[in-house]
Image 1 (cartoon, one colour):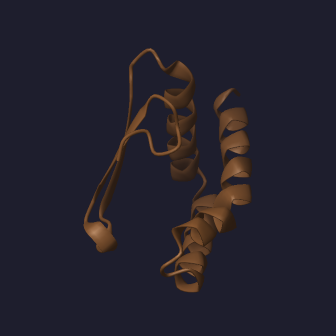
Image 2: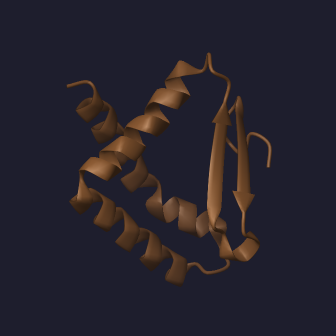
Image 3: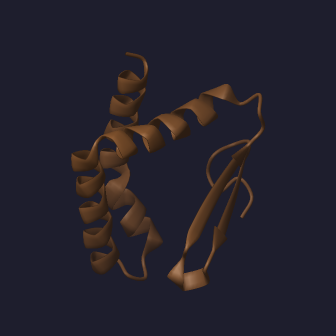
Length: 93
């Protein structure tokens, strides 16, 4: 799917409408994007409460916007931006 909104990224999906995998690939010198993606991953693994809130939001939005990926993405944008800020702050401790 090319960069899919993030310059320098290669984004792949598997599973079609029943998506099973998402892969984000960055060049190894793209430390900024690699660090923020790994920080979010690790933060969600460490903070079950946040992970569950994010999962609930995604389920709610998937039901509300089953055929509207833009509506789905807009619905989680604020949460994801805060999640990333919190994850990077947590990582830097």
